[in-house]
Structures are given as C-alpha cells and as structure tokens.
Amino acid sequence: MSGHSKWHSIKHKKAVVDARRGQQFTKLARAITVAAREGGGDPEGNSGLALAIQKARDASMPKDNIERAVTKGTGEASDTDQIQTVVYEGYGPGGVALLIEALTDNRNRTGAEIRHAFSKYGGSLGEPGSVSYLFEKRGVITLDATRYDEDDLMPAIDAGAQDIVRDDDVLEVICGPGGVQGVRDALERSGIAIESADVVQRPRSRVPVGDDVAPKLIRLIDALEDSDDVAAVNANFDIKAGVLERIAS
Image (cartoon, rainbow, N blue to C red; front, side, top):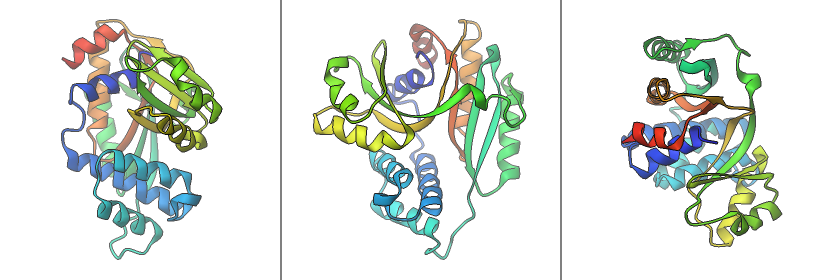
C-alpha cells in the first residue's frame, strides 16, 4: 500500500499539501457542483453530494461556499458554469499507471496543462482505456495507525467495510463506493478520528519503484495535482515509506 495514500498522509502531516487554501476550495466547490448536477441537491438522497460536502467541511470550507456550489449544480444560481468531468490516462516514470480525474469548464485548457506536465516530467499521455482497467472504484477511509489497530476498527466491518490494510503508520479501511459515509459514521460513533474519506480509483496491483525513479514520479504527480482543474490523481506505485519521507522533507 506504499503508494498514493501513504504519500498524501506524509504530505498532510508535514503541512506541505494545499497550502493554497483558495485552490483547495475551488476544487472542492467544483466537486460539489458536479455531484449536485448529477444526483440532485439533497445530500440525503445523493451519496456523492454527501461525500463532497463532508470533504468540504473537513477542509473548513465556509457554509456559504458549500451552499453556493450546490445551487450552481442544481441550476438555481445565476452564474452557473458548465463544469465537465474529464479523465486522462497515461504512464509516469518507472511505468507507473496514472489515472487523472479533472473537473473543468475548459477542456482545451485542461488538456494542455496535463500534456505539459507529462512532457516536462518524463511521462507519456495515453489513449482512453490504456490504464483504467488497472484500477477499480472503491471507498477508502484513512486513519492513523499509530493510534489504532485492526481490532479498533470492527465497527467498520459491521458497517460494511470489505478490508483493512496497514502500512507503517497508515491504516486504510476499504469499502464499496456507496458505503463511505456509513462506514465513516460507524467509526466516528466509536470515537475513531478519521484522517480522510473518499471514493478513489484504487489500483488492482502495484508497480515497485526504485529510489532513483521515485523523485521523478512524485514531481509529475505533484505537478498534475497543482492544476486547479485536477480533482484527483490515481497511481499504482509502490515506494518504500523511507523514500517517501525523504522526498517530502
């Protein structure tokens, strides 16, 4: 599991990721808008919207911003933009598969940014379907493994979690895409602190990456994530925790 979840956990703890809160709020608002447009503005009947709103609250996004994003999605706002979901696929250094999910109001701009990042950092942009088969959509809830162990997480299993995976100081609770909120609620009722909860494209298998290639790959992933239009970068790399720590330092 020494992959993307581990990398994001390290960066979060070192306060490296998303220091630009404005960019983070922009991405969260777009996710809310798209979820509301696709499934309606009531989070009780729209699990995707409920998850997007919860992520925004976790990031301390103001309530007014959340409500405005919902009304944009339902068409009630006067300044509604046509945000589209676009998926890009390719390979990074070391043959690592990358599945990039973007939310954009300008496909040409976003495509140019993605191509530039791949070209600059040693990757290759692929055709649709070139890597998507290597991933499967799953709900993933991450926890601090220095505070909890598998026995503490039995409420998650009772709530429908499919697996619990440990790697160093990160625990991942895996569930179906529609089960994230229920599993999260069960854990929080048991007093478990959640680090993150999301629906992601989880790799079916992982590619070992050596110390020499790892920094190049991480630079590419960070460059992709720096785009305002990129909502998520999913990757199937396996890098030793110590290497990730050195890269983040």
